[in-house]
Length: 218
Image 1 (cartoon, rainbow, N blue to C red):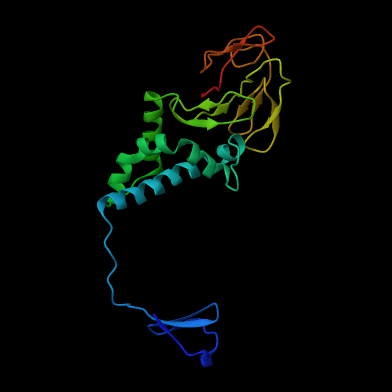
Image 2: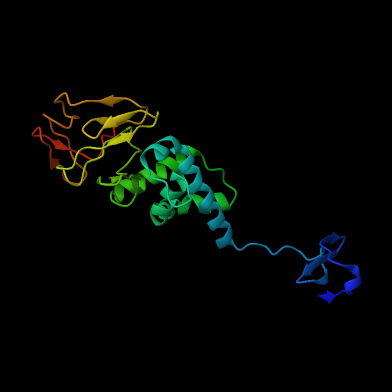
């Protein structure tokens, strides 16, 4: 990199294969070798790039639910917070598809969905799909749930409201449908009082005598 005389003054920019930069009052001239060939990526680098793409595609498939049921991180969206929280598990679930994608195979959204669901069935406590402060996390145990139910860590705490996918709010004792529908405490198997529901964490007793689960996936 060559220094130029001060008579040229501060210069910034490119002129053909020559770049000019002024740093602390000194102008530098640098030659850009445009003929240098790009370095070919290794198979591992290609697979890693494909893995990031399929992981991002999975978050876009479930973007409305993640926005409603997963908290935003520090200067990041709910989608990015979900990726950061579940990065290792999603990578393990989708690595095989990423290898095929890196080799030129076209991967569909359904293949991505099936791969994550299969992994979640074998590892039911590895992927968190719902988080709320003061509530037990909701885990993916197979297919993506159509309903989300948050269970308080401490049943003595006043139930807080949480937002459903369509922007409405329901109380903790009800079910939040992924499409915005809710069910109350009518005493059936899906209600927080008067009935029982299989809990993914074993269930805890509610004031009405029933057991409340983490979510209903029907």
